Length: 127
Image (cartoon, rainbow, N blue to C red; front, side, top):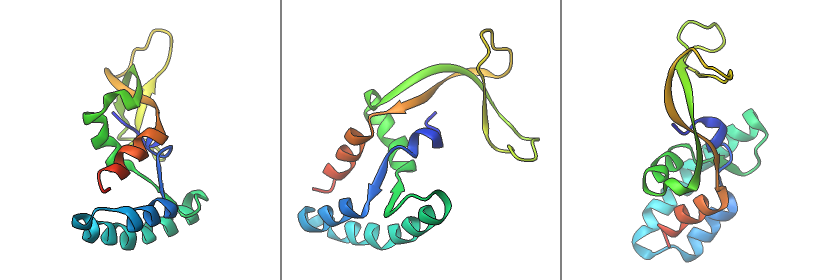
C-alpha cells in the first residue's frame, strides 16, 4: 500500500510542467496540455489545504509506478486495518505499531520513496 504520507513526498511542480511543454514529445502534447490545465486546480487546492506552493502530490502516478518500479519505495510489513467507526479517522488505514501487534492483517506498507527518481521516471514518459 502506498499511503498519502508517502505520496505527499512526490510532487509535480509548475517547473516540471514548463519542462514538459518545452521538451515533451510531439505525440504527447495533448496530454501535457491537459495536465497543465487540470493541475492548476490541484496547485490551488494544495496551496490552500497544505501550503504546498505551485505543486501537487503525484498520488495515483506513484501508486502505479510502484507496480513497475518497486525499488522506488522503502516498504515495511505492518499489521493494519481500515478504520470504519472513528469520528475523525473513518476510512483511514491504522497501523498497529506495538512490539507485538495484535490488530489487523500484515501487508506491505510504503514508508518512504525516492521522490526525485519517481518524478524523473514520470516526466521521462512524456519526453
